[in-house]
Image (tube, one colour):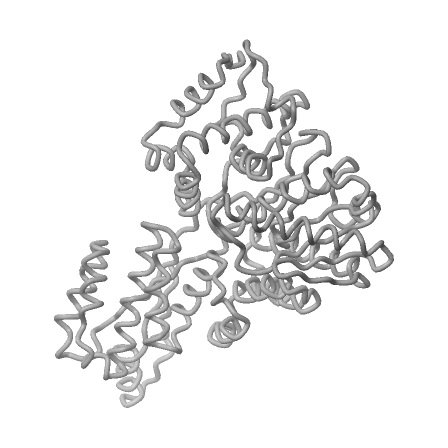
Length: 479
């Protein structure tokens, strides 16, 4: 429970008691219960071998930082409106979302001319937003939170909820100016500092991002899970700041490339050309384009291992925490086919990450990898030409999370299955349906529920059908 109650400090003076009761009952909203956080989401850092799936993806756990807050309207501020506003409150209490929204939208403008009533209506809009978010995901709640903030520009809870919604959707409305206002209204909250750090590091203002991460850490000592996440992000920011301190920067329309100034400039020119072509080609296929430039960091081979923590065999990765594509530049211009494949593959991961948003549900690894291979035209010969016969099946359900515990043989099979299953998904249902699945994942549905809802097909039947479409039999391994 999160409820403000300061009645214990009332003094014995009757006039002070009267003022306090008036303030509490008529002017000040009471904040109460934080909604339980959903399970942690998983963000994947993909590492691709130059000749095939030589290793499973790395993973990092992102705890759910949102504690959605409703506000308790203690009393109706204007007696003559008590019946009308009370009816809306009752609809919210009964979770009659559509009815409550309709009644709020139909409120006469004359009611909103009174400041106390406006604050109360703002509370109702805020609480509507919480119900909408719980029922239909973050996208459905933004309008309500914006209404609440517009009606009560000093309401800290509504501002926090809107900030969380913007951050989860990677909405351009999450600006520095907006977050600084949220910080002013809620100075003890860690989340605005985390969101502002995220915004600053995307703009490559790493020292400022580090300062806000430190301030977030000072405010979350009672939340070990969040402490762990902020420590991971802080370490990444500090490491990037140190490694990239003397890097040069070049920009194209949709990408920012950072590289060691001593490297041949032909490399970053080639990288930008490949990425801009990928932006047009893959963006059209996926029917989605990034809302802001994507950062791409070119490392020497030694720098790449040290700054990303990747293994010696890694060709490149998309870091979802920093939102950057990172690749080693050594030899890049001598093998343009390799460079093109890696950049296009990682660009798809960047697109998927942005579409799902910062706090959206986790995409199954098999679908994430399959989309990267399909959209980037990145399919290995052994994947494209799986011979007929019987193969040991790794059920798709077992390929939803990390692949780090799979043997080398099963990792190869995992990539083959991911490619084949995603190819079948796109060919049979089209990219429009794939987008609908992603939107359901963004609303934190499981892939099984999303398929049943959007494809009218169970997860098991989907798996059975794509296996049959390949003209091969896959036998489930014995336990």
